[in-house]
Amino acid sequence: MTLQFEVDPELTEQLRAEIVACWTDVTNAGGAVGFVPPVAMDDVLPTAEKQFAGVLAGQARLVVGRVAAGEQAGRLAALAFLVGGDFAFTAHWQTVRRVMVHPDFQGEGYGYALMAEIAAVARESGLELLLLDCRGGTGADLFYKKCGYEEYGRLPKALKLPGRTEDGEGATPYRDRILMALEL
Image (tube, rainbow, N blue to C red):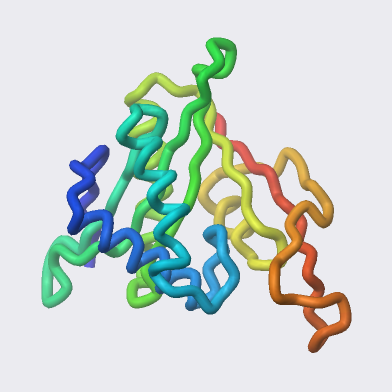
């Protein structure tokens, strides 16, 4: 199966609901996209609305990938946001945020296709650099390295995950924040 991408789609109520549902499913499957499972759509909605507001204000771009053919044709499978700054000296780069592939489609190569589409959109927009950060301990940094990103920094213990304790079931509440960049 392949994906059909749309850049800057109209943020209809249906698309918003699809994104919030996907975000919820990704989180509950263990994805590091701003929450710790379990979450409900009502938990995700306020954060999603902030991302949508950025898109509507022209401060962010949305890239969505839908299944192109077959039984699942038209289903939202992947998405990410490109967020720009408001400082003239940083206009040559943007940050990739909230990279998601729905759990039903993981392992299909959709993540790589999404990251390639994001890079293509950025190049077409005249950008020279993409930045992103990811939660340590998830393996996401290895995925992004395969997409051409290089680690340029790490903030130790920058993220303190709620609902975890230092000694509770061996889970530490802290994760590093890994900073990565891709020169275009």
